[in-house]
Each structure stands twice: as C-alpha cells, then as structure tokens.
Length: 117
Image 1 (cartoon, rainbow, N blue to C red):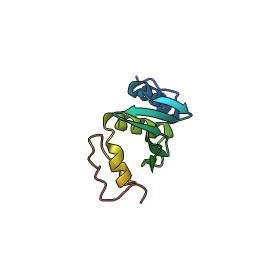
Image 2: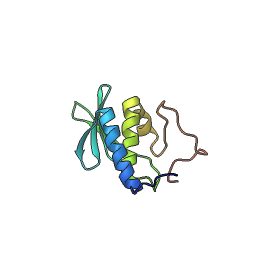
Image 3: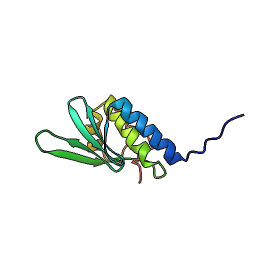
Image 4: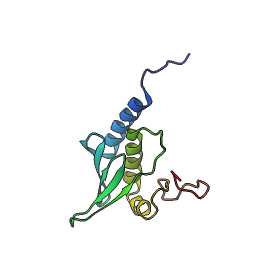
C-alpha cells in the first residue's frame, strides 16, 4: 500500500530547491533568488531570469525557458543544477532564448520550436 503525501507540488518543489541549493553551494539572496558560483563565473538565478555577474561591472541577463505549470522553485533548481554542471550553458541560453538545453549542452529536440511558441 502506498502512503500518500499531503504536500502540494509547490511544497515538494521548494524542498527540492533547498536540497539543490545546498548541493550546488548556491546562496539564497531573497525569496527564490540564488547566487551561484560556478567555474570562474557568478550567476544570479531567479525563476524568471538568470544573470551573469561580471567583475568588470557588466552583467548579461536572459529569461529562463520553462513549462507554464512548472513550480517556480523547480525552475530555479533546474537552472542551478545545469549551471553548476556546465557554466558554459549560459552562453548557449543567451544566444538562443526560449530553447531548452540538456546539461551536456545539446538542445532538446522539440519539433524545431521554442517553448511558448
């Protein structure tokens, strides 16, 4: 017999985000915004965007591609994991906004269309 959990999908996603943040070494800044040091780069990750913070005072920002029903905490956790595993993904994300990439840098095949189209 399976035990049923009383957690909502948003609560499960929030718990998942906390585990991922601890695993990746990301520091919670405010709400669901996290600062992540990956490689020689520092990222500010939110459910709406990922920003590359530069030591020269410049920054680059792009929107995070996600599914409409996906909890915001899950979006942040996914971005943290992908950036920690491969910080160079940011460059691909920035060049092709709206498309999703695997952690190895290869684009997901979605019938040639970006999310949200």
